[in-house]
Image 1 (cartoon, rainbow, N blue to C red):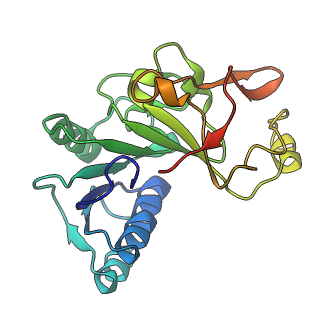
Image 2 (tube, helix red, strand yellow; image 1 turned 90 degrees about the horizontal axis):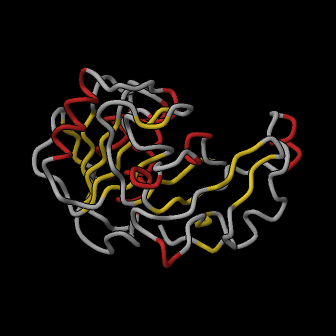
Length: 215
């Protein structure tokens, strides 16, 4: 968030999913770091006490979006959401399309399927933070238009744990640079980065040395 927009208020679109819960957790951390933050609840939060946890942190909670902050965090659906968007998330995505502000997506942009990629209306993010590893659809042709800069966040799982989960080939030193690793070339940032290659031999970056991301 700080790399996209180093100052100014942050709007978090939090959906009724674990992705929304991650957005709410991010809102609390951003507020603790001194950013002004508002959370727009798109549907009922997975944790019913989430709004009560936000208030003491100074985070405003809204039932509908007003004007966006200097940057918007898309935490509507994530990997569990199957496109196309409908109901509240679709309305939130339509609202977002009317505002020219930087967007940071959690896991994947809303409307971007874990396997099929974008289908129907899809949020176009300036940066996407994948959790643990990027999803398979992040390697599809044209995906980077929606993902923007692709950054992966460390979940604390080692290469053996990923192999046990059916994902061999994850480099043991993937997070040696730090807990956030950029998987797009700096020179190709924005809408034309280089995603991970996901193939039968595992997961690897294509022509990119992982560098520490600053999101």
